[in-house]
Image 1 (cartoon, rainbow, N blue to C red):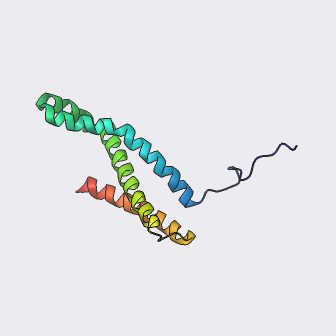
Image 2: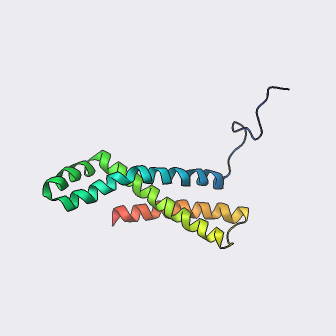
Image 3: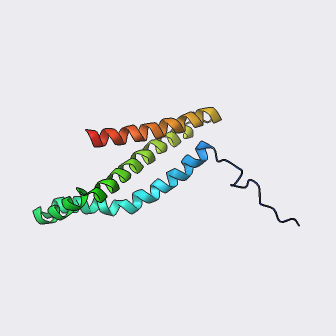
Length: 121
């Protein structure tokens, strides 16, 4: 038996956009689950009074806190938009290759746009 890579080998095979977005959907789900305790902490601090809120506000108002919240927001909107795309697919629409690729681009654009709108408004 020859010693050669299995097909398709990832060094020569380029994943289609839909495959990359599928992997990203799973990753954003994990990030949302991992980041949820921070959001819960934020809400808990609001309910717990001024001292607790001051601590949480100090963290989330810093650069690290803002970056984490921004990334969490982007993941949330991407996961939401891609979930809607999957519901459209479940209804039998957008299943052709060109439609699926276009839908993926729309999902990424919508997630970025919704994130920017949420942070700018």
